[in-house]
Image (cartoon, rainbow, N blue to C red; front, side, top):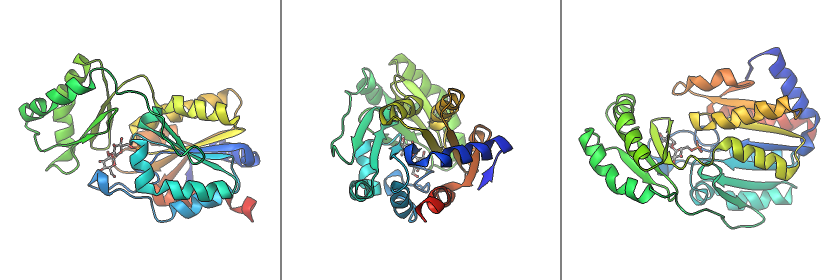
Amino acid sequence: MEFTSDDARAHYDAVRAVLDGVVVGLDFDGTLSPVVDDPEAARLHPGAPGVLLELAEVVRAVAVITGRPARQAIAMGDLDALGNAMLDRGAELFVFGQYGNERWSATEQRIRSPRPPAGLASFERELPAVLRTAGAADAFVEEKGLAVAVHTRRMADPAEALERLRGPVAALAERHHLTIEPGRNVLEIRSGDMHKGQAVRAFVAEQQATGIVFGGDDLGDIEAFEAVRALRDEGLPGLVVCSASHEQPDLVELADVVVDGPGGIVELLSRLSFPLRA
Ligand SMILES: O=P(O)(O)OC[C@H]1O[C@H](O[C@H]2O[C@H](CO)[C@@H](O)[C@H](O)[C@H]2O)[C@H](O)[C@@H](O)[C@@H]1O
């Protein structure tokens, strides 16, 4: 793990000094789960369950804050069982799905979700024709209930296909008053009403947290990074962690700590909690 500045190390120390009241927010894909070609094949890094259990002994609460539907993240990460085990160790596990639009906790065991945004059904109906016209009929379309993700990772040239699709998909999204969120070989189309920054702020407020750690890897995490930095300006100890990849280098300059993908996240979380557990 690498601190990006002397201030960054001070932020790490400030968070550790108040760890029992700290909340930890973690993105799923690319942060807790290594990126794979098939979105349905994603699973937690093998070290993640163990380190989250360790963390549960020393922090107030942990949230998986993801673009995935909550139901899917819970199933892929076996978060139901993990949440129960974390409760036994003293910390609540939350899942804020679809960029904070959905909410699940280990205590409540149910997902609260809004209705799909107006315009999404029409967008989905018109999308295949737009993909065909753009020569990308083989893009993988993931229907998420509150959003749609168009994936290019399994196409011949994923980066080129993403650029080719960006304009036409954005135009269709705009016609239906939806927002487009680019990510790692993906374009997500959803309502612009919510983002991970709002989810982070709500999490901190409801838990009356004494500090916040957030880890993410992609453009959809930027608002969460910004929220942690803004909260810090307001006096709350905070640490921004980038799960770095060659696919998305832009987040490094916004982070305090840069780690090497999900394996690095596991290592950082273990270090964060270790002397206190001991
Ligand atoms: O907020 P996140 O937890 O990072 O979720 C963002 C999107 O991640 C998923 O796509 C990404 O991961 C896939 C599996 O590793 C990968 O194949 C794809 O290229 C990535 O973009 C997921 O499919 C989306 O629904 C999430 O919103």
